[in-house]
Amino acid sequence: MMAGGDELKLLGMWASDFALRAKLALSLKGLSYDYIEEGLSNKSELLLSSNPVHKKVPVLIHNGKPVCESMIIVQYIDEVFTGTGPPLLPADPYERAIARFWAAFVDDKLLASWVQASWAKTEEEKAEGQKQMLAAVETLEGAFIECSKEKPFFGGDSAGYVDVALGSLLKSARAAEKRRGFRLFDASKTPLLATWAERFGELEAVKAVMPDVDRMVEYAKMGLAKAAAAASAN
Amino acid sequence: MASPVKVLDTFGSGFVHRALAALRLKGVPYELIQEDMSNKSELLLKHNPIHKKVPVLLHGDRAVCESLVIVEYIDEAFNGPPLLPADPYERAMARFWAQFIDQKFAGPFWMSFWSTDDESRQGIMMEAKQNLLLLEAQLQGKRFFGGDSIGLVDIAGSALAHWLGVFQEISGVALLTDDEYPVLCQWAKCYTDDETVKQCLPKRDELVAYFTANKERYKILANAMLQK
Image (tube, rainbow over all chains, first blue to last red; front, top):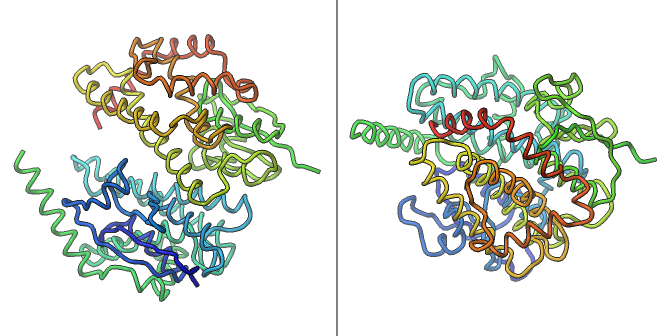
């Protein structure tokens, strides 16, 4: 239960991986909040004043004070609302370090190479991005073994920090599978992650915030169309 | 009995310094294991198979990688003065600025100092200078980003305090100057003068010699980075 007088607002964008992480954390903790949808090109005064450095979503505003950067928001939620819902980070300092390491890996290696695979200028760079992306997923299969210790989630019995970091990518992964048959978590290559993805996606807290896959497919098509138009205009 | 702490190290690394500064501030004794990064040891490859980089903190049978992850681990695993604030909101702010330093300073600064493409460099230098202004504003009359004592953000920014001067001297490019950033320059002096932290800062003249010797390689790297 939230303490009397706690006001939570989340500035987000429905297709943003990073905003989804904040939503997942809030949802897993069972916290209620006001959600404000930001347009990509028409940023609100509230967003610009709450995140003057990056001017990006997500921003969590707690009792008027803004917290920025997705995984920092996740840690903040975990540290403030300790009595509410399951813990998102383990109690043990070493296990916390492992969780932080793997969340950073998801961003630096998996997400970065996915961006390269989708948006790089040359086919060669895209192919390299794709290769690195698949290598990163294979590495994460090992990470799952290390973190889960034979339990259902990276966080153990319940979804936690790394589940949120990686799980937010399911949104785009499902769209990519529907659109072009590409499987990020392929059961034949990374069986544990494939079942983890199913399991994570089935959580009520996750279903409540995961964007509709068809909407994601349309959005991806629009993005590609725009990029193609921009490229041909040069 | 406390488990021994070892740090895999290489000369001149600002990232390794972060781990060592944190250990010294917490009063944790440690042993340094020197790595030759052109000939990585079995120990390094075993304990950091993913990135194959230093620093790696070995605490008993645990291995922790990634400098800022290591600093938070040190803060949480050992007693001693806290490196992060107690208040969750202040902690979030500290993590934000540490991440900002990590994301905004490495690449653009590297390119500013070493790249030979003058035109592209101008834009990057402007961005670097704007980011320095943001940091300057964060100090707001405090001695350190952490307040009265050195904390996570100071440790994250330690390369700005000690290494930047070295790069500026070798490359002739001035980014962090007294007249433009008086508060940040004062902070840099406080950091490098600190009795605890200065024991694990590499000697300035040795850094100058080391980086001068590798200057041509950095130019190639910086120009390659610009292409991306």
